[in-house]
Image (cartoon, rainbow over the protein chains, first blue to last red):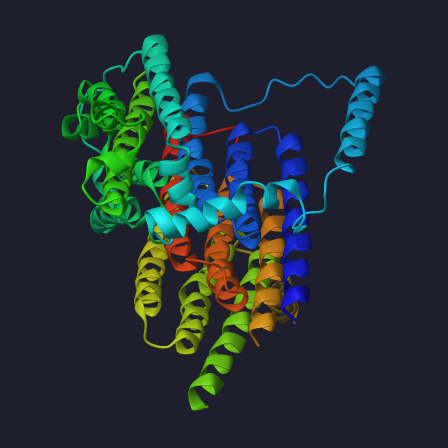
Length: 323
Length: 119
Length: 88
């Protein structure tokens, strides 16, 4: 029964993905296409959940369905809502795409089957990580252990990449300036309902940040969710007032502070004659040192991601447009 | 035993109301009536399904979070409905006032009146 | 019975998707997409309990919030920057 359910859910969701992709290509109104990409992310996250990849599903939903949609909509209002499509069919293009697709599919047949217990990825590092997490770090969520501790250097690189993305957007667009403008009184229902919602989102963001050791979560997801609270405030009450609550000048500093926290945690271990980012040096007991190290670096990641997401939103919404 | 029976009933009813709402979303003729039909799923079917799952998990931290999800859904979906309805009315989407039945009744009453006048 | 609820939810997702593709004006589509998001939350809860997904309640909670924010974003941007015309 359970096997059949897995199969039915997988087949249905994959069919939905294909249908949504087709519709997003054919429909020329870009608002609708953006919304369809939002539900594409929802369905993709469902598939990830069915494959037991919980943290990935979390991030896909938070970023793909939440933040990415808002960002594309901000970009759309600067360009225009109707696709500028020229309907020209090219047989040569179809042939080349078909050839490349066939070559890719032929290459995939060489992979081991999905979920095969003897695949190299299952035999080489994975059992070692799972055993070592239990022994050396002692937290239930192996993904967080791998992300923050065993592969902490890669995560440091990712955090710096996110920071550079924020810097690049700031260089290109600047953070802009929006005058606080009173919203029309008709939105009273929205105002009253959204206020407790913002509080709930912010608390949930903090919960995800600190609960990442035990359940799904972690710094990346928490940063995006926390920023979504402020984005919701900006959407309902006006961007001008949101910029008074969190000024745009403070955000690059917070992003840099997040990266700095991560780097300094690594430096402390260097100063104690241990490798960079070896959390055993942070405390007399190695396991509690690991806990402390994971807490600090996740806080750094969360801060950097929150600041960058909000900064990119401010940059897009602050571009001067003709009203 | 009773709890698992209640859970089954709630899940069954929830599934039926979800399907009803979706069929309504698809078949009703006009935006406002579709809005009305879709809200059935969010306000009735969703709490029923979640209560069914809650009865199955028992009294744990998970069921407390599920209560929170019910509260969020019951509060947020009517707000979205309100905002959508206001936005659509503001931008000029008119409800469809006539159906086949009302057109027939109008023409029927017209022939009756003209019949009485000609007598 | 849970299997029946899951299948009902999958059929509902398909029907809502059809409305999202068909809907003659954009408000139908916004409604359909919001409804799709709500059904996804329900599917996560029901299937997560039946199939034993790890930590599914947190994800369902987050989806409910993200769905709200996304729909409000679409409505706000649409009403500001495409008030008349090109409603398709």
